[in-house]
Image (cartoon, rainbow, N blue to C red; front, side):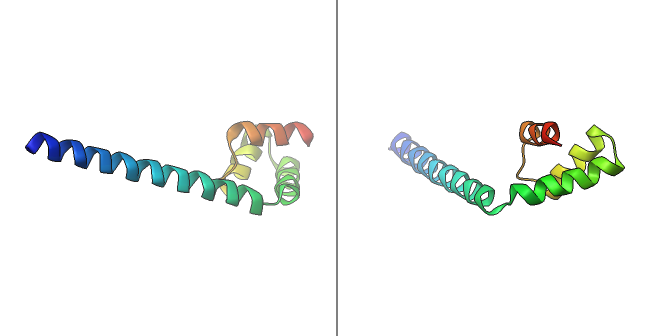
Length: 79
């Protein structure tokens, strides 16, 4: 009987985990839709005039935490 309860609780926790992960992925996608790449590029250009590459990319990712390091590096190549 207790094994059955453990299995049911495990299955419930797994379903909750899956639901929360999909919700997080949808929210991250929505955040990327709302963020303006032109603003990000303008900010990076401003930082590039004042700082070197690594410091400018760090400042960009601090300002826009939804950006991955790969995306920030690709933006740097466009500057």
